[in-house]
Image (cartoon, rainbow, N blue to C red; front, side, top):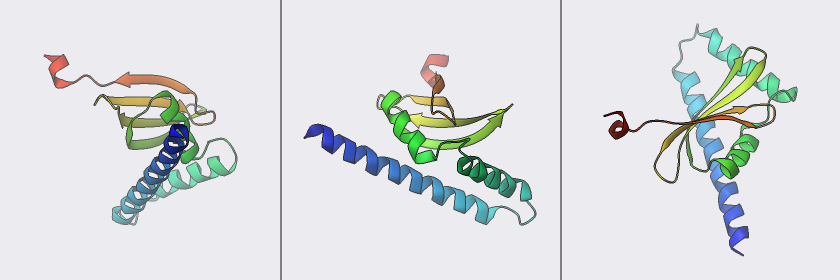
Length: 123
């Protein structure tokens, strides 16, 4: 029974993160200058990549990420590096560690996990 509850919680959390991402995207487009076609082009290219199967949809990636690197997603970027699409995700781990994770956007394979140094660690 615990597993079912956890799975339902994870699905709800993934949907909530996806919704937050969509709202933030819409807000960013609303405040962008009308002449900023580059952002719109990036959005269109990303959508086309998902439709062409070159990139997994964000909810799928977030669900897989939670299994390997659990935490609260704070920011998501989809970038094209050379000939490869990369999801760069910043999250806050359950231990309170700010972490940046890079994933292959086609497979959701974790490429790099980089914890951010806390201010205390830098001293």
